[in-house]
Length: 197
Length: 151
Image (cartoon, rainbow over all chains, first blue to last red; front, side):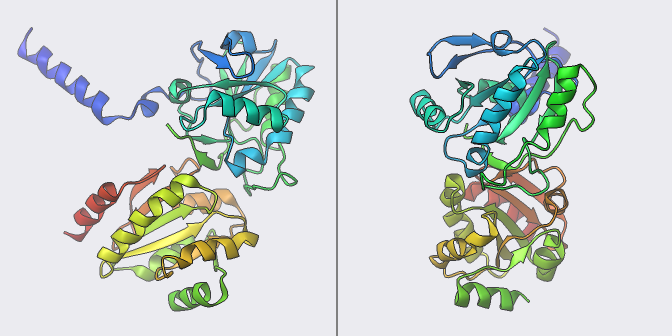
């Protein structure tokens, strides 16, 4: 091994030490994501991304059990899941908080009416997507390409009040993906609680 | 204005608001000192965990550092937020969110801020943003930043 090669290796190692994993792995709008599998909190079975994606796409929503900003959108998420099923888009919740067990996540999903698949992540999928907060949405089309990233709604005035929560940011993106049309506003700012890694 | 903010916090168990005017209202008045802006909420566990460290750092460096606590609780929960701050004698400026447009507020804080709390942003003595941390910040991390700016 030449001295130059050793030097290059050292630089590479240094890069990995300095850059946090999520910064390396964050996906961006327009990028195709790689397949992953996570456990469904209700059945305990592993589900792959392609198994939870509808014929037009999927809205992956990072959620939490105790975050008021996430909980404000429980009904909004359930309503979207119901409504967009007919348009071929599924809503899937992902809980990546290390502090929340699969059992707690299941109980929360059942008692809060999250009538859609909720997956438990130990942080690797949050890292893959570069997700940092709840609620935070990534909409993928049927080709697994990210078409929207950001808030469910209320991005101009974040709220913890369920009565005020709406899907005004996400809905136009879902409508576009359902039609195979370009998403006009592909990024919004999602405010919320830190994902606890 | 700061004195008024402190008095309000202390006397009426409520908090003044801050929004798009974050820099003019909460950072610029402290020119000459390092300003540590912390976004927190009463319901935010990691925020409550890190808060004692922030207060400790502020108290150890009062001559050169000011802590500005911005509660992201709903405005009607200002009383709850003020109540929480009372245990720290509220001897630093504290506000509650009062923005009209979240984007404008977050751009004032840091255009690169992704939107998670807790978040801590440090401005140097000239008001320039020098450090942003989303998620819990540690005493040592902040101490290093402050030491560098004070040298």
